[in-house]
Structures are given as structure tokens and as C-alpha cells.
Length: 115
Length: 111
View 1 (cartoon, rainbow over the protein chains, first blue to last red):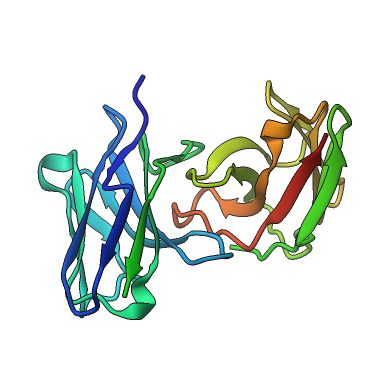
View 2: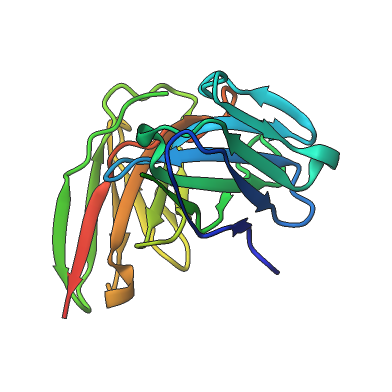
């Protein structure tokens, strides 16, 4: 079974430029998460989707970050414009549902460097 | 979710048991203890979870004290591939379905 796929794995951009990250969750997983991981820190949740619906986006900086999950499968996270402080690893995870003991499966992440 | 306290780093010799402690003194009755690990340049990986009984699976054992205020993750025969950051997380199954990661323990397995 294929795991969570993310692309690109690495991205280098200049500040004020836009950037987008793509995530393909494990087939059949209804719940999708985007996490941000700063260097030396644990991941922090940005947004959680149940199918197409964003049910927890309280930690998403909405002035510059946006996300979508059309058709309840793939998801895209966008930053526009990027700032120096956005340099981090962006992790995508999925789980069969959000309830009970469902394990979250993580992708390898996209490492963003903003110059 | 309750906060956890873990040592910043630990070392263990290859082939020996690695015992990773976690303090969660403010854990409530409906919160479970979860362990994830993150190998360099990879996403976190689920290891094990438990409520109050000791648990064992193919990866590790989880020992939770009777008062549930602390737990220990045991890797019985550590290998070099177990070098990673290990996160102890307490999670309310009934509440918000997110994992709140701390800084974890950086475990280094030495040959």
C-alpha cells in the first residue's frame, strides 16, 4: 500500500513569492492534516480536513496561507506571499477517520527555504 | 491536551534495551498516551499507544505507571535504525483529533 505522497520534497524561493505544496493521502483515508515543523521543534497542526470540509483551521495564518481539498482526496497548501519565517518543513498526514484510535500516517514532508 | 516532559536526548548501545521516559503528571482519565518517532528527513511514525495497561507490539512496549502520571517506551533490542526523535503525546480520544507534539527525545543508538 502506497503511503502519503508529498511534492515537491524541497523548494527554495525568494521572499514575497508564492509557493504551493501538494499532498496525496492514503487511498480511502477521509481525514487529512497539514502540519508545520520548525527546525528542532515538533510538528504543529495547521489545518484538518474531513473529506472536503476544513473542520479545524484555527492555527492557519489566513492572511497568507490557504488550503483546499477538492473532491476530498488530494490537497494543496499555498503560501502567498512567502516570508523568511515560513522556512520550515510542511508535513501532510492522513487517517481513515478522525475518531477513536485511528493512526495518523505522515508523508515525508516538503522542506521550504525562503531566501 | 495534557503537556508532557521528556529528556532532550539519550544514548543507547546497539543491541541493548532503550528506555525512554515521559512525564505526564496532569493527564486526565480519558487521555491516552501515544508515542511517535521521527527518523531524520522523514515524517513522524506511529509506534504504540495505551490508556492504563501495559501494551506491546512488534515495535515496542509501553509501560504506564499505576497513577498514569508517567510512562516508559521500551525498544527491547535497539538497532542503529532506531536513531530518531521520539515524541510522547497525550491525547483525548473524545476531543480534538489532533496530535500535539512537544520537542521529544533525540535517541542516538551507538554501535
